Each structure stands twice: as structure tokens, then as C-alpha cells.
Amino acid sequence: MAPATSLLTDHYELTMVEAALAAGTAQRKSVFEVFARRLPEGRRYGLLAGTGRLLEGLADFRFGPEELEFLAERKVVNEQTLNWLADFRFSGTITGYAEGEIYFPGSPLLQVESTFAEACLLETYLLSILNFDTAVASAASRMIAVADGRPCIEMGSRRTHESAAVAAARAAIIAGFTTTSNLEAGRAYGLPTAGTAAHSFTLLHDSEREAFEAQVATLGKGTTLLVDTYDVEQGVRTAVEVAGPELGGVRLDSGDLVDQARWVRELLDSLGNTKTRIVVTSDLDEHAIAALRSAPVDVYGVGTKLVTGSGAPTAGMVYKLVSREGNDGEWKDVAKAATGKASVGGRKSAYRRINERGRATAEVIGIDEAPELGERDRSLIVPLVVDGVVQPGFTGAEGVKAAIARREASIQELPGAAKQMLRGEPVIPTIYVDEN
Image (cartoon, rainbow, N blue to C red; front, side):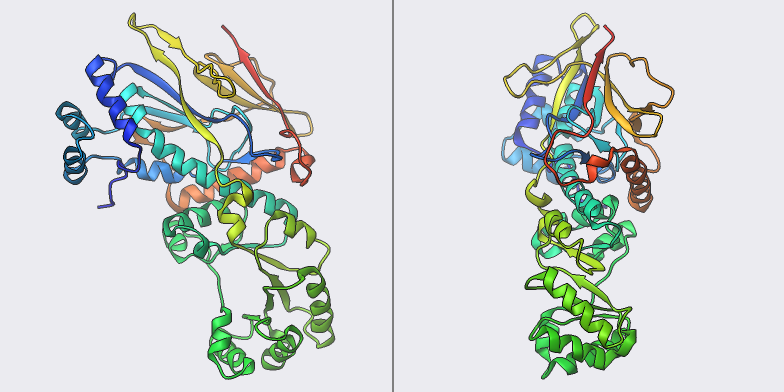
């Protein structure tokens, strides 16, 4: 049995439930919404990721004997609340954007409709997954945009928490990375994995040649040899001597990568290794990759900057109550009015406005009722959980494949400015249409 996910939450989620149970409002029907008020500074769009993971964990959002014992010992909540938690199963409905979808400020990425108590419990859990995974996927998407079709490898596991490493690898693949170094991500989600050797393997041997010979003998001539442990030029020459023209690649991990890649390419070609690829690593981000576009680089390996969102480690998503049932049984739209943190009340519908060239021109958000749309406009809201049942196709390896397909189609709709590194406003505006 998988470990419970119910304590991956904040203390105050449970105390709110306790107070609502005492007040008789816990069972009041409610709609909560996940959205981002703004994109990270300078970003033109965001890429949603993590939906599949949160749906997988929803099945294990339970309060078993161990969880209940902990809450009782710490006196987090009273006995009435403990009894309620013991029977907790999410029975509501969740709709939202499909994983892999592009989003903008105000996009209703997830809407949770259930009782207040049920929806309240999910807040921290949902946000912790979506904020991290989306931050990684959004950064990865920018890197893919400037890589100009050259493959990107995710290799950030050692730069983050061990569980976050799996999530980051999954998010990066959804965004367009070709492989990951993380084996658990490969096992759990069917992701392609890759890797060869680090500097320690070279240092283990009495000479660089012996290290290369050992690697080639085991992994074949198509392997990638790390050539900058000592002297790069000599490393390249030795690699070619050991593996010949069939050498798969050389990896550069230090120094001026632009200049180095150019003369290493010339050297490889002069030695007859015209098909040997150049792989570059060394703390790359989207700006470094953009600077390398003119260099003869074949593959980018990205670690630290990817798993930390390349300067934006959270997507800034929030979870707000937007509609609830009143004492009279009628629905009432509610919204937060605090300066700089206002929300928009009401159950949302969302559409991408598409022009005759197949390009997105606006994010159209309807409040309480769907707005009038054009024939090319695309609906963005899909059912994810219906009456407590997770819908098929969103989890596991199947969910990753679906998210990749959604990302590919969504990216194609964006204006060309989305691929530029120039800072600016979101590439399309968000428009609210209130039919009431």
C-alpha cells in the first residue's frame, strides 16, 4: 500500500475543518479554484504540469490509524474531527486544464467542487504539486524554445530533494526534454533515461586513455566521453584514438562553451569524426542555451537551473473559494478583495480564442456561464475527477504521453513571440466575460 498523502498539508487546513464542523458549515457546497495572478517576471506564458501526479496521490489521501494517532497525540483537532477524518474520501468533482496545456494569468487551472471540508483539505497538497511541477515545466519549455530542435537532457536529480527529482524529470519530459538521468522517473512513468560517466570515473584510472578504453569496452563506441577532466584538446584526441570515427559524442562541462564547442568541432572534423556529437553541460539555463545557438552544439544537458525553475522556483498558484452555497440553498459567488491579491468570484469556463491562421489571440474566461464563442475557439476545461472517481488517461505513463501531446498542440497555437527571450507581457491577453 502506498503511503498516505493526507499529512502532506498544513496544520490550518485541519483546524478550518474542525471549526466548520462545529459551525455547521463544513458540508456547505463550495467551488475552489487554482489560478496564478501573474506569471513570473518577464515570462510570456506558463506550462501546466503536475496534474497527473496529484490525481495519483488523491487515491491515497486518507487518514489511517497512524495519521489519526499522530493528530490525536498532538491535539491538532478534536475527537469529532478525528472521527470525520477517519471516514474521509474525496467524493467531489475536479475539472481543469489538461496537463501540458499552456496557461496565462487568471486561467482557471483547476476547479474543485465538493463540500467545503473536502475541498479545504486538498489545498496544500494540490498547490505543492502544481507549483513545483509547473515551475519546472515552464522553465523547461523556455529552454526547448531556444534549443532550436537540439535535444535537451534532464540531469538535475542531485540538485534537489530526491522525490522532487522524480517530479522534475517528469515535468521536463512533458515540456519537451528527450531523456532524464533519473531512473525512478523512468520506472514510474516510462520515461527514457540516459547517462554515461562522470569525472570521477576518469580520475579512478591511472590515465584518461585507460578510462576511455574501459568505458568504450563496456558501453560501446557510440558512448559519450567526458573530455574536460584534464586538457580538453588532448581529451578529444585521446577519445578519437580510442573509439575512432564511430565515437558517439564528447561532453564539455566547463570553460567558455561557445568558443570551446567551435574549436572542438573543427578538431573532431579534422580527425575524421564528422558524426561525433558535442554535448554541453555546466549550469545551463535558457539564456545560456540561447547564447549557444550559433555554436556547433548537438545536445544540451541541464540540471540545477531546470529543477529550480530557472529563477522562478514556484509558479505562484493560489487556491481560492470562488462560489458557495448560502443558507438559503442558493449559490453565491465570493471573492477576495485585498489589494494586490484580489480574486474573481464565480465558477469558470475557459476557452482559447483561435484566429484563421490557427494562432491563439486571447484566453477567454466565462463566469458562471459560457461566453459566446467563434467556431475555431477551443474549450480548455476537461473533467479530471467525477464524483470522487479519477477519470482515465491522466495518470501514470499514459498520462505523461497525453500531456506531451497536449503540450505539442498548445505550443503550436502560440504566437511566434512566445519563443523569444525578450521580457514582456503575456503573449495573449486574458479576457473575463460575465454573462450575469
